[in-house]
Length: 211
Length: 323
Image 1: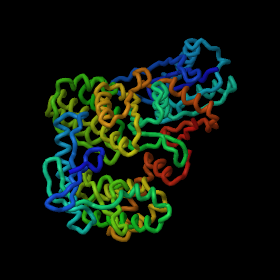
Image 2: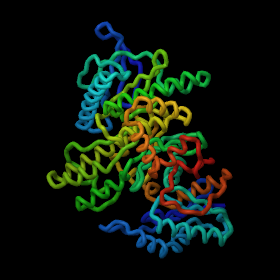
Image 3: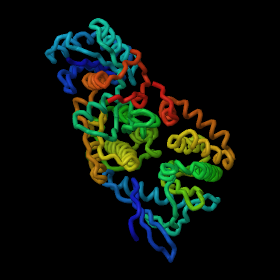
Image 4: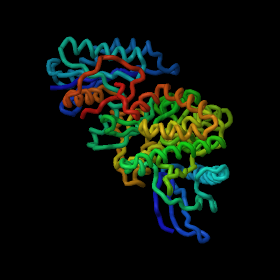
């Protein structure tokens, strides 16, 4: 197994598992927090991530397959591709491809929401652009199973904050196409955005200056 | 030549004077907060009574004459309306009477910039933690140079959370210092832990901790509350570090005086080879010097003074950083 990536809470190793190309996500100990809290968070997130990733897979979303789980480790099938944030940075010349991928990222989120799966950290860093430009969703560590319209709207908000308006339109179109309650959830998103603290943040992302 | 700054967003009426980035005076009077908390008009009344004497004592401390002042800054927000208005009015009066430009300054920006300047930091991530505010910020050039908010509280500030808990536990509310004392020797009980991306929330943990007081010892609750809420902040900051790749971290604001929070941030920063500093306590408390410092930077970088307004919900990310 060799280290291929370092996230804020986990190390990702790559290698063979039962003959398959696999990755292992290992949640590392954080020395800044007390042991009991550290163990509690790492155990709980590993369990939730494995369970929700499997649930997402069973409703047809594009996600890695979970192969095995231990206390702090998840063995998953390896996804070939680049992260959406990196893909968007280098894609000036291939705008059409970028918009197809964003559409796909939106429609994958719709599939998840239809099954009451809220991702919890739906940003371009957690979407992999696979072969053919399809979006594959990873990192369900902060996810939950809930029918809360608010939580679903926050998934949209996180992505919206990371995209420019054109990119967001493609994303939102993909979402509207697949999410059954797209209308309600997008209405809630607008309501969240009018709450004070989000106002300037969203405007800045959109390139408007208010002050 | 010097720049004078007035801070009055909450219980402190502070006046500071800056000369070429150096603090040459920093005076204040603080309203004593009793068990009832801050009643805005009462605090504002206190500020009006003390405004003149604090301004005079700052000028005396700096050893300058009023004619040496080339600009005035004041806190435009966020804060309590009646309190902000006293600072704004004092600043306006002074600026008009001596004929110098007036710069409205965002309070959080003052905390961040004074810390950045004190430690010669170039491009830090800032964890700004006070009573009403808890935000993670860093400089961003798009669409204009400003402190972008990467994460923040979705409900109440960490300081208010600690103060509310302190009151419920019959302790003095003081940015968590009394909670920290009681927490010594406590043991851990599970608390709600809410981090969403780089945002976090404290209302749930406050409710839980307050209820827990009825069936668990105050020491255990205080310990668990402090450990859990600070771990949430650390994790959100850690995510911001990973996302931005920045190599410096500073913390500022009232709660940045907490020894445990500083210890945790420093351990986390070390794991990522990030340089970490915390503002000295006298700058973490609200003060006028930080407002003067930002006003001086605005003046020297040719910023156009904004309309002399107050804005109780002013945000640091709407200010253009011209320096």
